[in-house]
Length: 189
Image: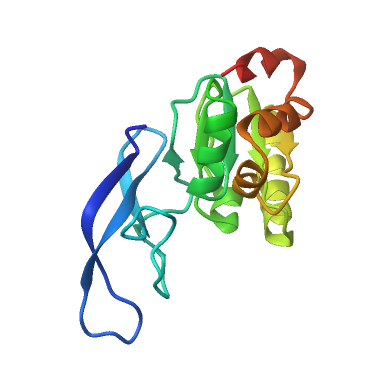
């Protein structure tokens, strides 16, 4: 997953603070369709590695994000796109043979630019109104250019919640009920 890196001392400052502190962080490259770097997303982590940092602002992004994505795996004629990095990494855990991108937010999900050659698109939504609206926007754009679309819905708030509450196998089974027959063989892991 070359889009992701770890930095042991990425500078962090909450609003109103005058001094930055170095904290461990997950660094994600946000790239365009050609793979050119367009932005960077940072998620600050707890020093012990057990979740996110106990700070007011746990995530920040900079650069040109709209229309671009964190490409967790390379795409082919199939693509799975969803909101957050953690959510989409959960899908990679459950279905490692499907191409997965993170758009970073619901508004960015609705605007992600789809690459040439995609024939089937799976939109992994978060179970909230913003996720539903973003999926509808992306669905309409994809359908307009002849891409077959299916929406993947979590059982809980998002697929990361599903993975943490259940198991990788339970998530894979839940996804198998929603994935098209032609792609189920790619759920093997």
